[in-house]
Image (cartoon, rainbow, N blue to C red):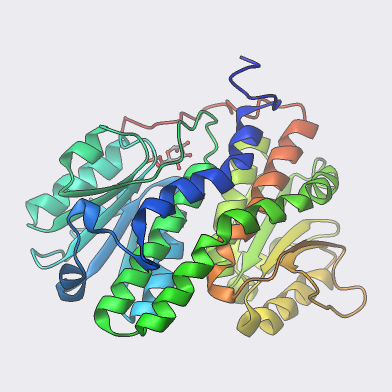
Length: 367
Ligand code: G6P
């Protein structure tokens, strides 16, 4: 067991630290001569240009990777993407046609609802692209096209490295789609691809916040409830951070779009309640900070994950976790690291079973 954990105390921590390698192994074979190349699965730029609509369907953490994908694809390729939770998609009679591409994302490739969503897409005549980690899994076998994420086996129930590689594939897809559609130039596509290639190294650098995350975790162990807030890409990351924390530490946590707080959730904020703000997006920083100030003035204990060197007015942030500075669109790929580490250390400090939380399964093969 100890050998399997490669010297780490838990699989989750091992898998968090495997992320630089996992991302590198996943993107390297899909970059050809400085440009994204997903042709291995049969997906051509021509096809990407011609699909009428794109749907991304997944469960849990994989769905959050899909949310990041939506933001990045829409931003770069100016094409609408619908993201659905698989168990909702399959029952809402979605308007999918044979001209659409349904992208299913799944670490295990066995999640019952995601599989059912794939079947529904096929019934409607759509093509299905699967982004899957486990080779030869049901979803991989049944999809029309497969892009394997090469994270290696993920043992911890809480998904970490699978999320990062799923995001990495979403970026490659967004780049290829945007270039195919002519919404970015070849030069811009090459530049973005080169930036993506630096991510493994940047994740490594981000790991330097580990001690800081451990310290912040020590402030969370007595909390009974907390909030994660953010806007745009930071909102998608706050959803993932919140899920990670609640699933293993058993602390009730909600993620909220920062701008929506005042429509109800802010009434939950009481003295000392931790609120974790994710604030890495430059154009949204001021707005998010003003939301953090709102909760601070109601007694919240404020923790902010932001770019290195971000300045805040005196007394607004109780704790800050800084991550390296990348261009906004790429920030999710490193911002997830402190969110995973905070969830991990909170759980360890509470003495709970990190790798096998109660009531949860690694792969949910029942509906
Ligand atoms: C379970 C796991 C999650 C995972 C979700 C989707 O709930 O505990 O970590 O995100 O299923 O799994 P999949 O294998 O389809 O990515």
